[in-house]
Image 1 (cartoon, helix red, strand yellow):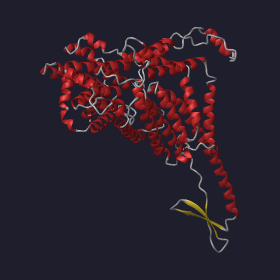
Image 2 (cartoon, one colour; image 1 turned 30 degrees about the vertical axis):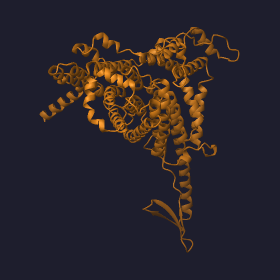
Image 3 (cartoon, one colour; image 1 turned 90 degrees about the vertical axis):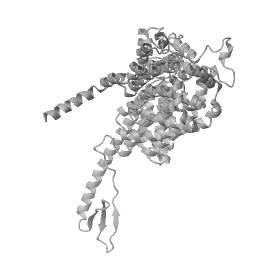
Image 4 (cartoon, helix red, strand yellow; image 1 turned 60 degrees about the horizontal axis):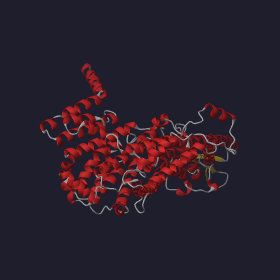
Length: 611
C-alpha cells in the first residue's frame, strides 16, 4: 500500500511539473541533430522543431516561445542577432497598432454596443431571427475588432437577452403551474360529487388519464389535456429555452470567426500570412486589403447563412416559419418582453454623442482609404505621389490612429440643440476640455503585444529557413506529391490545418505550416496562393473545443453549452468552412489571383532560392 501511495504521489508530482519537464527535455533530446550534422539546415531545423513543440504544447507562453529564435539562431550561426531582431517588428505591426487605436475608440465610446443593439432590434426577438441578428452584428464588428474583443463585447448583450427569456419563461411556468393546481382542485370537487357515475382509468402505456362515463350504456373516452412539465431540476424553464441559449451563444463565437476572415486585419493569422507572403515573394503585388476583401466577403456570407441553418437545424429544429416569422401577431409574451429589454438597453445609451460620430467618421475613412489605395481596376490615390511603393495599408491606419490621440473628445463649438443634465455638465467641467479621443492607457489595454511577438517569431523562423536553405530541402522531400492535382493538394492542406488547429493555437499552427506549404507549391510548380490562402482561412476553424481559440473559451465560460455541444456543432461548421473555402479557391479565386498559372514572382523566388 505504501509503495502504491508513493507511486501515485510521484505520478502526481510529475504531472504537475509536466510543462517544465517538456521545456527541458525537448531541447536536450533534439540536441544530437545539430551536433551530428553540423550544417545550417540541421541547426535551423532544430530551432524550428523546438519552437513548434513549445507552441503546440503551450508549455511556455506563446510570446515567450516566440523568442526562442532570437537567441538560438545567433548561437548556432544561422542568423546574426541584428538580423533576427529586425524580423520582430514589421509593417503589419504598424498596421495592427493603427487598427487597435480605432478599436480602442470604438469600445471607449460604446459605438460597438450601439451598432449591436440596433442590428438586433432590426432582427426582432423570434429565436431564429434573434440568432441571425446577433450573428450579423458579430460578423460586422469582428471585421474590424479582434475576434476575442468582439465576443467579449457581444456576449454580455446576448446574456442579458437570454436571462430575460429565462425569467419570462419561469414566470410563465409558475402561472401555468398555479392554473394547473386550481384546475386540479376544481376537478377533484367535481369528481367527488359525481364519483358514482364516473370512473378514472390510467393507461400505463401512454401515461394519460381518461374519464370514462358509465351513466350511459355506451362508454365515451375523453383525453385530459396534458400541461407542460416544469423543469425544477434545471436553470431553464423548458428544454427549448435551453436549446435557444445553446444556439445563440455558439452562434456568436462562430460569427466572430467568420467575420475575422473578411479583412486582412480581422485576425492575427491573416496578418501573419500577409507579412510572410510579402517577405517571401516581394515581387508579388497581389495581396492587399481590397483583393482580400473581394475574395473573402462571399466566403463569409455563404458561411454565415449555412452556419445559421446548421445551428437552427441542430438546436431549434426545422420549423423555420415559426422561429423566423416577422409577423407581430405570432409573437409570444416572452418575445415581446425580450424586445422590450433590448429597447431599454438601447435607450440607456442615449442620443448619439460627438465622440461616437468622430469614431464613425474615422472608421469609414480608414475603410475607404484602404479600398482606394490600389484597387487594381483603376489607379488608386497612391498614384498621386511621385515615388511608388512607399505607402501601404499601415500608413493609413497609423496616420488615423495618431490623429485619435490629438482630436479632443468634446465638441469645439457649443451645441444649441442638445441639452445636457447638470450631472453631465459637472462631469465635463471636471474633465480636461482638450482630452483626446483615446489615451495611451486605452491603447495599451487593447494592444495584443503577445501576438506581436508571436508574429515576429514566425517571421524570424521564416527568415532562418530561407537563409539556411531548409525550405528548399523540405520542398525536395515533398516531390512525391507532384502527381496530385492542385485541388487535391489544397484539400489535404485544409484538412490537415483544420485538424491541428483544434489542439494548437491558430497563429502558431499557421506560422509552422506556411513555409512548408510555400516550399511544396514551388516544388509542384503551382501558384503558392492556391494553398496558402485556403490554409490561412482554415486555420481559423478551430471551433470544436474550448481551447481552440479564445472566443470559444469565452462562450463556454457562460455555462450554457457543454463540450459535447461544441464538438457536435463545431464539426459541422468545420466541414462548412472547408467546403466554402474550396469552392471559392476553385471558382472566383482563379481569375482574381490567376491561380491557374505558375506566376513569375514565384519563379524568381524559386530560382534565387536554389542559387
